Image (cartoon, rainbow, N blue to C red):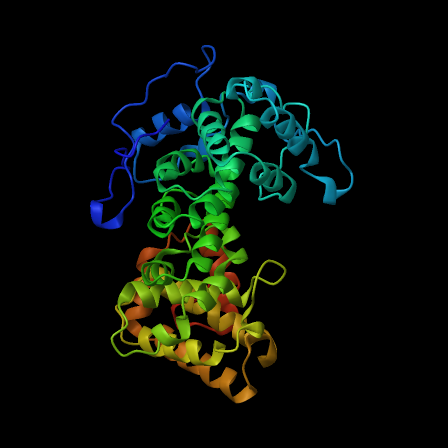
Length: 392
């Protein structure tokens, strides 16, 4: 069991996020020579405490029992998903002398949901609260199999004890598998906001989607401030939550201020670039009512910033998306769309901006060829004039 003195590195007492110990050892009750998934995640985390685990920690130590892309599905009816797990838990909680270790291999032949599940939650809520908590902690801390560790996390996701935050955060670092339930479990706790922020800075891919979406529902000022500057990390999966970030973090209010900092302006550019072209994934500019206001504020701030390659590319992609689509697809009127494109081109065609992008992009690289031949060519950007047809 995790004690109240465990703290995650990088968080002080003001943040109220607990720190795990300097080292993790195998406690009595751990099974076999294969490491518990919790211990495995913690050891990987120690190697680079401020970054996501390499490849999300995959392959996991139990990979031989769970071949890649292979999942057991015993129920075709999605409404019954999780019922098999719940039935096993009902039997377990019905025996007063049952030990959590008996559940380690109990779920290998059933489909274990990785998201919140009503059947599993109901089974947990019908049982003794202290026993549910004790079972969940043991399974998360000691399970050598992902299925039982997932069930343990699902049990903790029905509880609210702050002392379990370090357990949840650590297993949540294996975010592709455990991210959804970790995010759900942290949101229920009084210290969950700061804990989610800590985890958001250390997950990528699908795990980041789950955690960012939870932060969008958190509503705390610290969460909104971080989301406005750091939510999007460049992964294409950012398209699933970019619109949620813009809405939940009140982007339209933050970006219109005259003192918006560079981090806010740069991240706004990333959000707009994503929302301009993420149809089929998440909210687009067409369905974002403040789009004209945010676009106008962004280009106004952009003109006062120092030119960099990233700023140039983001602005060019936004302008290209605006020019290439009907105004309605960008949430603008024709006049608004045309004026915004002109404003972006005015900045991009400045001599110092052209010099910055030419100095920063590798002319022999694939990205340069794509960018010069597509957005830059369609917009007739001066910095790239003649570079795709041999003219200088």
